[in-house]
Image (cartoon, rainbow, N blue to C red; front, side, top):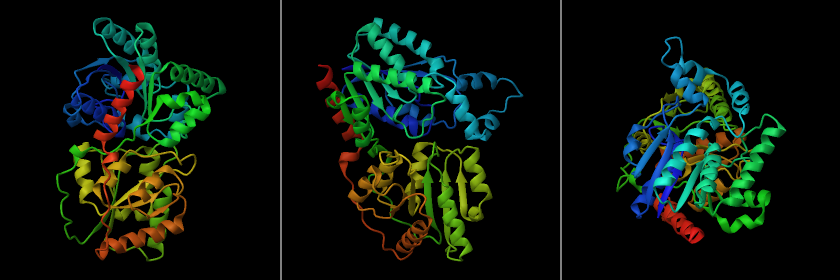
Length: 423
């Protein structure tokens, strides 16, 4: 099998968005498939992870220009007056949502003509068994569909995130939403195989776009990659500090504000232990940085700028309790990618998620029960103290690991599914 993958988010860009395509390519290659990648070049982004450049192992990667805003910002960096950090990280989210919403499909649509031209060029020289897009951005699905139609090659779509059914995507107008919906329907109908990151998304797509899609859709969880973890997890080192740890960003409705309110209340009630530290690892936008700087709990909060995925896994393994957030509104089917790395670490997990959602289901399957909705501050405070006491007294549980949720297993199942669908 030989695939041509369109992936806007790809190393050296960092963050959770590049994990799925990079690890997917690695295991495609490990199992004997050839993969060429088309991605964007030279954009301003919130994080970079150059270490991952060596991990994907694609046959070749072709980087194309773009006319989207992030590419424009990169061009403007040559000007001394352009302050990248101020514009990208300090602009309030409400303004960025308006700007993003102005564009048809999404704000990365500017890479479409360049990616299309490169895709047609490669398909004219190489016989591909399928062209594939990993989305978002959703313009990746549009360009891959156009290449598939032009070159008469089977189309595969990988949903890293939902599109028009995404709980955090707001459309500027009814026309914007209708345009996106029509494109999504057209692409789904033409696709031979579709992967999604949750059972709920498979159900939602079938309800919205037709039950006839069900045979095309395969659930491929984001999963954990065994290569990120040592053969044997390090023994816990006795320390005077108990560390609560969160890695990653906050997007859409996801927010740490209720968690911070719980910490502030524990401090006000003199119930906060004096040997707690809460670590956030990531590059955060304006609203979150202001929240973390101005809260009462700021003295126990440590914010670490974005580091490589390898190093953040090392920091995760040295922590005591891992923190998880999923917004309540339309959050039942939301599964953060970090969930599976948290599970593989076998650490205690403090989860602020919909108690009846798919993430909660997976946590409970693995034995984790410290779960409450993100807004339930009283329950959160109780869970925080209970899990702290478990760690303090050495009563942490021994949690199981299920190979089903490994990257290698998930990708291999998807490979089998693709072959059945396109042959």
